[in-house]
Length: 441
Image 1 (cartoon, rainbow, N blue to C red):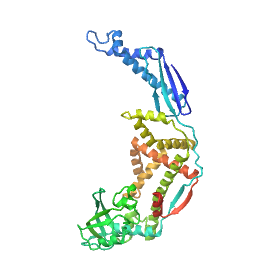
Image 2: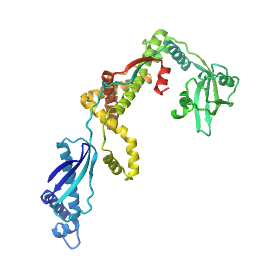
Image 3: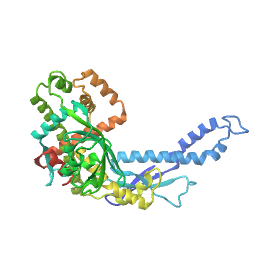
Image 4: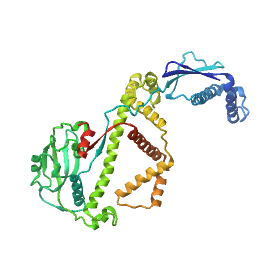
């Protein structure tokens, strides 16, 4: 067997595999001999069928199968030995006059080669690393929210300011039908608030979405409207009142604090605010980090220039799915996936150049942290090490979970590299201002 490569250009190559009779004859004869042992043909005893009859009946099929196996194994070994970084899979070139009745064969494969490029993490950019601050107003609101959440609900007949309402926003034409719990202070429009005063269960209040909230993005939460549709949305929605309650706020005492955080961990309103701030800082840091990661990703895609073997990839896309695609369909798929492919290549280079690796200890530590956070949400503030380790073992026995967690761990490692090497200005903002920055407003 002889394998050669012709580089068409920096991104495309043709690999030629020449197979001779000596390369496949031994294996073909072995397979046919096994067929003969087990063949059951009328007129012959089992195992005594003439080899000539076996070859006539099965020879061509076995030949094709064994040559194909030989091709695949040899080509894979060649790519590994030559350390070729390819995109997609080799594509066999169709030869119209190919003849299986000869003894020696020549096969050609098209390769799409990964481009050579550099990633400059220190390049000049306009990226901002946000630091979201927790102000006193937010802390007071969170304390009040806790008091309401653990307070006593008292049913009422008619609506007054400060009451809690349960009801459904609806607009048949826009497909809006979302049941929520609200208080009237969520509305920016004071006229909207007045419409509710004195209303009873079963009453319907008509509201205009324009200027209804202080931030149009709240339409996404209360009406379940897509982000692309919220800006300037000006329609009428109905709110059907289903429950009217007033909340007797819970007293912030040791019993409530122990219920929230465990015995003796928090013992005053001041410590409660510190705990709220600590939790909010972690949550906000996660959101700010995600935006930073997204912004760095976009920057690297836009500013890391390299060519791709586009025509090869479009042909490859036609063949990889369950059903073959037309050239036009492959063109559309390539357009949709090109950006993602570019980032995969950039990400891989960053990983290699910074020697980023994931160890099993990394996976265990990350999973244990996730589990502790989840258990804390359900009130289990101090689980034992043995309990956490048992859950970690069960999670990491699932390969799909291992894959998902590995991606999260690598994203964290990439984020750390970007924080260290990408030059970005830092800006302190409130959470509301961060939301506006997040959505480009």
